[in-house]
Length: 214
Image 1: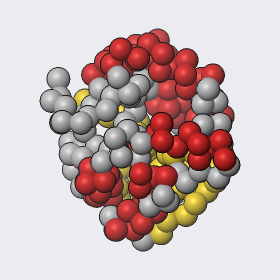
Image 2: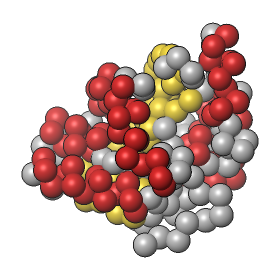
Image 3: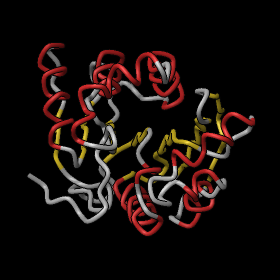
Image 4: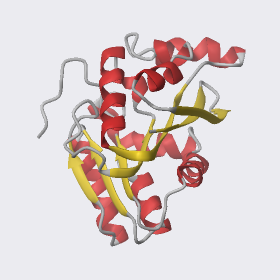
């Protein structure tokens, strides 16, 4: 089991909340719509090598592999309990998806390994120094011309989103997200082109999507 660094926040925020993670995403975060949008915007090629960083319980992995059967799909997460659920989903779906336990800040893959990297609802868990390390690692493992699709909380737009923003702070970890700093961090990590693809409200927060090209 990967040793968690101090301050590590698991997929559901706390280990004891993990059984509620999938229902929360499904019914509160409108996960079906979110996962379909990620798949469309990722533009995965038929034979692409795809990495989902912070894959959680594996829902996006299964969707991606079903949509692109000839792609090589890999998921990595530092939460062993969430990975256990992902392994069960993959087995039930009868798919050949690689699942690795590890941290976004130290990806165990060679340089230029993947054509596509995805990450959703992960970076707001990380303090800024680890955000930078994770983005540098994602840039490293992408092939030249490869793309990174990032979905996470960004600046609130409505008064309800602003009122709820403090619940997303995670001890200050989400401040950069909520102040609109993720595109800046992407550029600092070396991405040549950063595009905002869309945003939508989930009531208590606003999810933003960016595509960054190496």
